[in-house]
Amino acid sequence: MTDLVFHSGTLPISERFPSWCELAATALIPATIESEHRDDFHASMRLRAHGPVQVSTVTCSALTSTRSSPLIRRSDPDLYFLALVQRGTLGLTYANREVSLSTGDLLIYDSSTPFSAHMITPTLWARKVLVTIPKTHLPLPPNKIEPLLGTCIGDSDGLGDILSRLITHAAPPSSAERAGEARLSGALLDLLSALLGHMTGDAPIPPEARHHALLLQIRAFITDNLSDPHLTPQMIADAHGISRRQLNRLFQNEDLPVAAWIRQRRLAQCHRDLANPTLQSQAVHVIARRWGFTDAPSFTRAFRAGYGMTPIEHRQAALRAAGPANTRNPA
Image 1 (cartoon, one colour):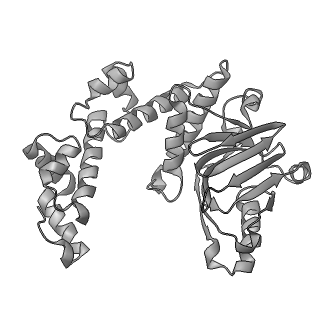
Image 2 (image 1 turned 180 degrees about the vertical axis):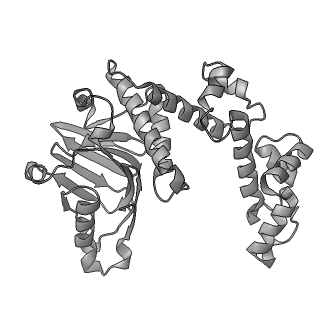
């Protein structure tokens, strides 16, 4: 199963809760689900497999999901779960531990230990991203990971924040391309290994995990600072305590060198904004400057080289395609 989409709203009300229970047991993990809203239950799931890693975006009414010892004895696929809370509260009782997570928190647990998870909604529905990972695909020894299970894995040198960003990027619906699924899976596994290894203190971290963690951290830094005209490879290297040569080596197996990657991301943001009808009153050079281009002629040349047309031509074509009401003042 590579893709799965479920919306309870497509079903009769009487079928929504039992259908959700059946889906959760087959697509996620067998568990007993209870909800005070079973007579008016709402849920959706978007699931995508990235190689061995499965990422699901789950939105649902308040519920409790319990995985008991008999269920584990009946079937245990030996999985780790990462849960990223995006809305509401997630409570977990696991191996005599109790933890409560709110928006932005990240939790790790597994399929081999009894647990009870409570999704609590603030107003409408709760939402989380659930990452499912076969235990055999994490290089760290299980006895090193076990003390962290059932706990919130916090931010260690920025790794937790980068991992949360990557999970959000991998969660469907997303722009992650099919060709990059295996690569994204490897990045998730390497970054999680680096974070858990950092938290255990004495677990060896594979060099490739350190490489991926630093590369993802740098790419997130670039994305957050695209509007800064002073964003250069040297500035990036200085901000991360590495040499320019080390930075170039990090990007040597990427599709583009670091400077070209910055330029491509800036052009993509300009391309998007120029096609936005709500921004048509903004001059081209204003949009270009917003994304770090300080010289209008250089921006036009780079845009033409990247997209085969000038920024104005692209804006005009996009506004024409959007409809006659959006064709005023295209430049």
